[in-house]
Amino acid sequence: MDRIDRFRIFSRVVECASFTRAADQLGLPRSTVSAAVAELEQRLGTRLLQRSTRRVSTTHDGDVFHARCLRLIAEVEDAESLFRQEDAQPVGLLRIDVPSRIGRRIVAPALPDFFARYPQVEVDLGMTDRAVNLIEEGCDAVLRVGQLGDSSLVSRTLGTLDFVNVAAPSYLRAYGVPQQPTDLQQHRAVNYASPTTARVEPWEWQDGTQLRTLPMQGWVRVNSAEASIACCVAGLGLLQIPRYDVQDELQSGTLVEVMPRHVAQPLPVTLLQPHRQHRAQRVHLFLEWLVPLLRSGLQLQ
Image (cartoon, rainbow, N blue to C red):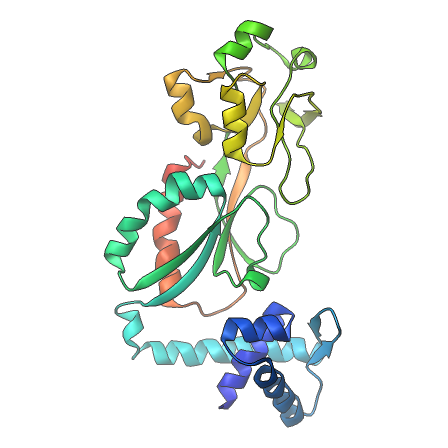
């Protein structure tokens, strides 16, 4: 094992905050990973990592060394890429995660086009509506909809999703058409609960420069966009949802737009990647293919 290999192992341990997860992602025994980091610390004469039973974190010296490692690894891989066949014809596996409905409606149907261009690339496509931890789950990139908290990840905002209020004609015939927010107290909603926090999202609308919210009563609570649309079509209540999600239903008349002047604020759509200076060519090419597909398919603003 050469010095660059040890740098790569150390950097992966930092990113995973775990020797075990780093070993799994690298396909190495945990003892090899631990020994590589110990050899680095001995060579440098300083402790790079703080070890505990729950997680691994960097010391001050570890932070400094990690930043230098990333630059050195990137320079070495850039030099090697001048002669690697992969850059002429990318090969290998990449891992991506997207919200389930976006994956089924937009990404999966378009994948034959990507594979026609790059037949030697394999894609592990996760479709989940929960917050995915890129580092722990070994993802090359994830797509998230909504506001993000503080993050050390590299983020790329692709645009925003416009929302719409909808209901089934059967529901409106039975309970009337809401015209303004004060009418909402007489209605029921298909309530959406976050798969990650189980928090039920309130109804919201823009009132000038202010955002107003109102908890809605409802018969049913769901944790996916597909389920919320199915319940709304069944006449179980009003629904707030990104417009692209119900474009077909609106065009066919299965759902009807209501209260068009009182809609939820747009949500950002963001692509997140680990903080690495160098990314495999196959990941770069996939994301360059994916971004315009999403902007068009999601009707991003």
